[in-house]
Amino acid sequence: MKKRISPPKRRRTRQRMAILEELCSTTLHPNVAELYGPLKSRLPSISMSTLYRNLDALRQAGDILELQIPGHNKRYDGRTTLHYHVICERCGAVRDVPEDYVSLRPGLRGEIDGFELTGFRLDFIGICPSCRNGGSDARARSHVLEN
Ligand SMILES: [Zn+2]
Ligand SMILES: [Zn+2]
Image 1 (cartoon, rainbow, N blue to C red):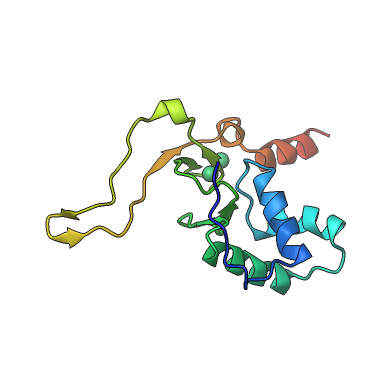
Image 2 (cartoon, rainbow, N blue to C red):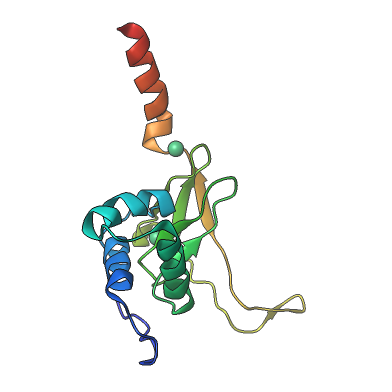
């Protein structure tokens, strides 16, 4: 689990370290709103714009990954080593694909049909346990109706 070392001139603030710790302590790939709650209880002075700014700095330093989920808010990942994601096609939830599930290790050298390779994306798509059970929102609603 080697992490890229940031250049020394890039000062890591306490807030930035707390955000990184929060992201490294979960496998839920939280979005900004989901990160903000737990961070706010640790760092009451943190604002949403500070959080955005720090996430951007962490991403640029290569300390976190920013995940684009079509139709949903961006999610963030404290795990920056090569791994793949399974994404819920209904709610946009993201989890890591177990390493032994896929042995594909795409190379980043050379060309494909004249394209110079600069990276790759590989996502698995599925339906998360919550959505398979009708979704927690749907359950909560039906619970209210039953009462
Ligand atoms: Zn889902
Ligand atoms: Zn991940």
